[in-house]
Image: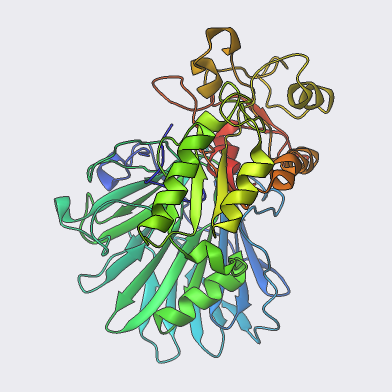
Length: 467
């Protein structure tokens, strides 16, 4: 729904969850006390009737904490983490009385059992991260949250595509509350949260020393940075595990380096992608695109890439060309290439329900579309429902990208565009965005394969666009 000038290659976003507060602790139950843990290699696991916590040391500078309000943890699966192999952390783990200590060359984690609280100190004994003594780890039904101490001299950065100041601590009521829930927010202003993409990672800077926290949870999540209480920072999610990583620096560059080693680093883009891009809603027909290209060159205005929005398509349907507006795509793109232009075309993940069309038919045959709880295919209005030719209008269906076979099928559909000379793809509307107010996205109980572990849209929404 959002058009050119706002986004480049991907669309994601972010919204508002239940606001945490100790005043509202009637809905939140503290994890309470824990018996001594059991140890397996570099992981200690605690269990009580309220839930299970596993604390692992991955490297001298990285700890992982997993909590679920259930008798045991679920499968260890992540759409974000590419590797937890950092070598031997050379950690010592000791449990004495009601305390477990995990020590490395860089950090010392102290876990008190009664009540269950975690604190992290550096090698000099300086406190870096502490659970709030009053609440610590908590849950409310399937929702989980951890409350941490927020010092007056700590600055908080990160959380990705968010409005406001670079320092997320802010001033409003002592701070800000940010929600992670990918949302198509066309025409947003500084007051809007969430936006397109979810980045549940923040960096703490205090007296020149840095560490980071990464929450690996795909459900709707929330970060409260001193919003209701100036001395508390809390984060959590509406479902799934509270699965977070403490990543030490001590300088910001080292924190980010370790974070990206954990979650992956993108390949370097081609040189042309770093040039000047020209995009708007929308350039059509082909003669108009040629006019734009000619004028850039005649006026000696630097430009390397031209973008095509949905009007190049037949009825706003992905993987199609409007034969009247663009009768010869390969010839057009070849001519633009001779002028020094690459071409990027938009592709939205909402093919029209259109029996007899190869994309729809192969999607149905391959069981590639997201389903309703009753097993029927999810159908909803998106751009094809707004086609200029009323005869071409119709509802859309939505690939289930959490399924490996579906990703392979969808990837193969780009061949026609690439063969025509398209140099890049503008992946739009993949929050996913639907024309279904008030939510503007899929129904929460839509079913997804989830790599062979079926789940609903609540868990897949925030990663739908990255799969």
